[in-house]
Image (cartoon, rainbow, N blue to C red; front, side, top):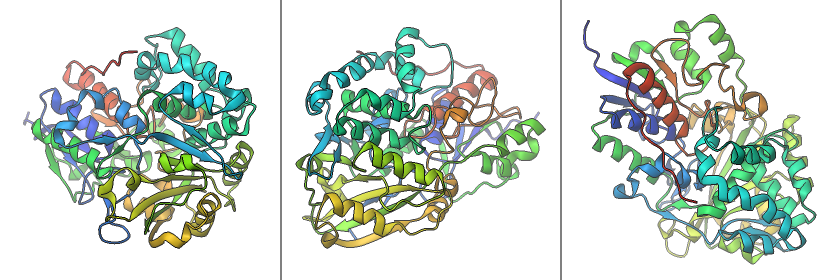
Length: 485
């Protein structure tokens, strides 16, 4: 038989594609990484979207899971220029009365700021923060027998609840609103089961290492991963948009950092009828409408806590956030959407010219929406920062179609690679012994459409590449970072 040109080919250079490529290259294999765009990184891209000198993160911006990733922490990314900056406040949550709840690294101080919910917050978070080093590899993995079953059970009892139910432990608007904002990162109605999970994971991450941002922009994470991959001997080709298996060089394994829709287009003819049927039934989630601003000064927040925060959640009370997210599930566009806002330039001077600033924000919308949400988002910012609009000197927007045009994995504007509800939490993209194997030998899926889902952590890529190492190459899997308690 003719020797293949490569041992493995990875299609797509998002954080999961990069992680998969590095895992395979670390094993001594010959790996080719293909990217359809001119630059690598998927959601890890930074560009001057508004005015010269203003550097904006095109998709992901704040990276608690990247800094805490059990796989990325094993890589020498600092050697390739990656530097994280950690704002003093991970996230602030302002209210209409001019106050704000704030999450900082100290769990005790965060709890004290929640008044009569101090003890309730500590009882919920303290054991999970302490247990996180042991359970992180299992939380960020496909369903399996956990290494620490008691700690995992404790996490699961809370994580599998709807966010509204778990928030019922709290009495104050501050604690309830704060948790609702965290849970809204799940991009689904807060009454859905498992919506508490992402809220808990984000709070745990904040209390362990904060919510850092990469100096220079999210592109810095991708650049460091690519540099490490190349240093190991990996090969990269850009401007190669793969639509068919016939475009690929010969190899023993192909790993796809794409969602089921693209996978069917590329390789559907190789799959069994049942696997094709499962992929066609895969459900994509809500989209996002995103704005980047160039500002002539910092955002004039009413609450001082917001001026120290890398991330600000704009939604006021739990009830208001719940109503906003429910409206989207009904195909509506709320007048007061929940807005996730990042202000990287307050802490990273490389993002804007001297004396100027950037801001980044998005709200959730129905999948495929073309409705312009600029005014609704800016009214929400102005609500908690009077005078904000007067500081805007440049603006760039992405609706759902433009998000998908930028990154085909964002189907209908879905940045999570598919709905992360209870029906797809453990079976994404299909019910199989391994979610990373397709029904065709040698073809694997490594995108956020596999467990553990969306987020810049690379764990989907790590697990998919580990599966390929065991199946095809009979090689050992690289160990994950085991953080000390």
